[in-house]
Image 1 (cartoon, one colour):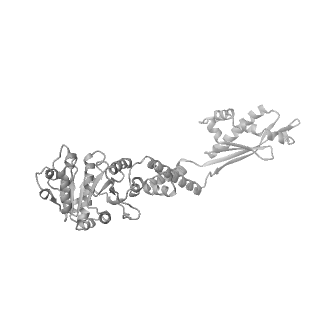
Image 2 (tube, rainbow, N blue to C red; image 1 turned 180 degrees about the vertical axis):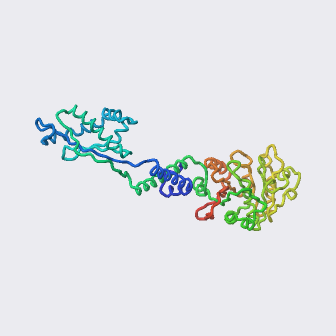
Image 3 (cartoon, rainbow, N blue to C red; image 1 turned 135 degrees about the vertical axis):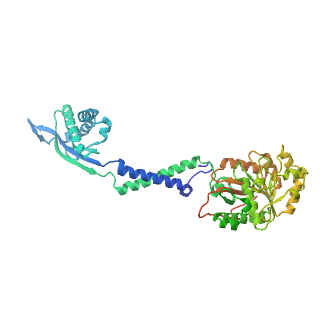
Length: 455
């Protein structure tokens, strides 16, 4: 788990299992299937047979009668007899005589022997998977054992008192077996989930953002294929069947207005820790949801490394660079989008040293003029980790949002970027979690004034 987490309670375990519910369910099902196949197909029935022996000394010269006055002496030797039974000599002779395809150690694992309390009797049991072979194998073992034992203790005689036919035994009942299999599958699932969590360093949910990054989640953007910003309208999306999207965007809009009222936020910078995390798309959606509520909104492409807003909104590429170079006024370079109240300022032609251009007086004056003309300004920047121009742009914003791609962004990378951003500017508004898998019940949480502080 994360190094910042010192302990884990049962709630954390349930959260992990819920977060990895499909993996957990898959492991449990596979384990139970394997247990069922082993029970019904792979492990045959087990049979047990047993032989009871009596050990004693002959009565005078009569070899067929035993005297019992020396039971205590015999009992003291019982463990020696059991050890003789479990020797390789007995096992190897049995295997050779019966032509068994197994090692002496394997054969001995099937054998059990124990003395009977307060008697000179010893019971030998054999567990075997073939009913017809079990008693024959045990009788052979007993014959070889008696021969070996009487050579070591010639003063004593060993006699078979009883031999029981093979009978089927149940090591575990079906109920206990499947309960044990279920418990085992849960333990395996938990172990795998813990292992995955240990090596998984990505951010997956808003809980991960709040836990590992310590910043609030301003909004969620569902994972969708080919989002068309130009038709990003709640009614149109709802009619298309994408029910979670309008709700997510309404929550995002409500949170943005809350931020605006609480901290007088007008100019918002949108960045990310690494490229290809959906930063430009998220900035576009952010601007669109503000415009839908009647706010005059300007979306500026300040990503000179890889400008993309002119492609998303199908506008001319001429824009910010041309304004700063004095080639046109901002009124001429700003393009209208297909959404009411939403205007686009593309990046313009790529420049050799964008940091110098961004830090110029012309840029400062431009932002001041645009703040007077628009209700909201959203600035799309390069990612923080590799671009100094992103850092230079912080001076023009009232706060910034960092875009985090669900199940893709590395939390250590995001943390490094946040440390760098906080070193330059403390005004972090929160995170936008992007590419969130769609769910039937898409749980959203608004920002709480009691739990969240905006810098």
